[in-house]
Length: 317
Image (cartoon, rainbow, N blue to C red; front, side, top):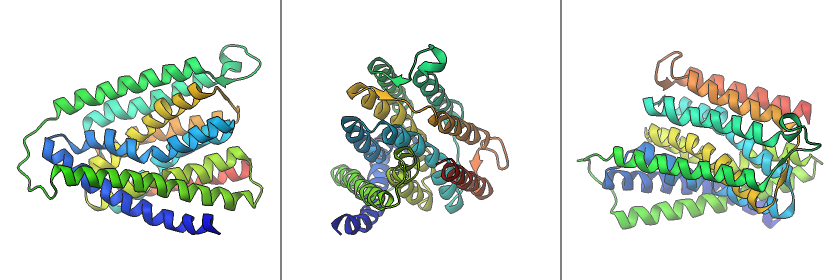
């Protein structure tokens, strides 16, 4: 009974945590003269990726590789198709030039890297496929390179901002920390409740990982990007998603594989390709329709694509 109560309370924590994280991090950005996009790519995406990290570490120690891998790939797909789709319907999302030509292609590259690394049977002629510790270290090195890139971006985006500051730095930091904690707790409680509910229906680990766990751990991203879109802070909304996807593959999967090599289920290849295709859709949206924007029509297309993907998973599962 407690699990189901926490499942409901978790949603409240997610919404309030997202609100605190957006307000606090945005205020910090204005105070120190760093752009919202940089904050979205770093503090916000790191905070909203906390549930994925927690779930994957637990899954790695317990040897539930299908849940761990499915969680990350499913989360990344829902981040782009579901969350950006919903956010674009709330308010059109502007895609900055550097996001179009740098951060989104990084998402495509991360998907291709994972596809190559995880398919030992296809590329190396091995008898089984595993994401090894060495490959986990390689992914974490790419994470370090990404962080180096964002630090350079932060230095380049330093700007004088005369805007009225709503919160002091100490209060904004406290709000950001409370927001991250709220998202982590809320996300975990929602996931625990979702898994308990799913277990009653006898669903497979990979299906649970790709759907319920993936959507559950993506709820912080959903809450944060939706709130950011509502507040017209579109750089945070987009930066949160593209940054979170890179955190998920490079850091969360890299650390998970380092803790314990992850046996790879070949059926997840299709899902990795769906993620790559979703990232390509995001790239294309900068040039289709209202250029440099994900508008409401494109948001609807993203959501319909996600509904189609979930229908495919149910049929396959």
